[in-house]
Image (cartoon, rainbow, N blue to C red; front, side, top):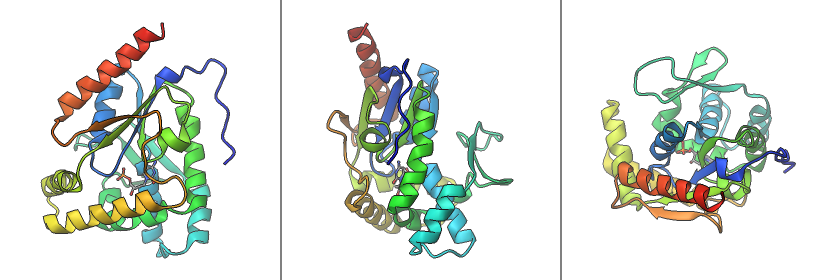
Amino acid sequence: MTNPKAPQEFDPREIITIDGPAASGKSTLAQRLAEALGYLYFDTGVMYRALTWLALQQGISVEDEETLTALAEKVPIEVTPPSKRDGRAYDVWIGDQDITWAIRHPQVDAYVSIVSSYPGVRRAMSLQQRRIGLRGKVVMVGRDIGTVVLPEAGIKIYLDASPEERARRRFKEMQARGEHVEYEEVLQSMRERDRIDSTRTVAPLRPAADAIRIDSNDKDIEQVLELVLHIVHSQKRENL
Ligand code: DC
């Protein structure tokens, strides 16, 4: 991958990466952390979801790697501040279509891991993510941000929880949105995504060697946030 170089004045401590499996609490943590620090919150999963949604919409098979790669290189995905107060943290647009909630549909959940396993798709998405990350003052969330997209980040968190706990959290979110799903179905889909995300050949889900690993099984968001803020502030003090 031809990575854009980091600018001269680049401060790695102002780039925070949060990786981990689905529903480990990454997005909520990143959003709260970004708010507390006055940083940009960027959830990279949104880009893979938007591409998957568009493919389903256009009747492109998720097996068609070549067409999906070409689509990834030109799809105009926009992530902008929230335009509605309906629980969203940002808007996601493709052209003039607001797809913020559409990309959370179970059908997108079912196919997004396959779409995001293609090297060409990842290259196109990672380049855009890296450009945004190198501007600094960012909390970027995903699976490969600390390992591949922004390996020079100063603070890398790997947030984990058991599949059962993550499925419970996702199930509750879906119920709250009025979706009719079974817990077992959510758990099975979670396990399948974990398997694909962590066994793909390009940028598999795994903690970076220098990541701080946090298990959120027995911690609520406030406790995890407090822990990470402590890490961020002590890093700043150490490096003064
Ligand atoms: O975080 P999420 O559930 O919205 O991510 C959706 C999918 O996108 C997930 O199955 C894996 C993929 N993804 C990825 O491969 N790399 C990223 N940096 C972010 C997400």
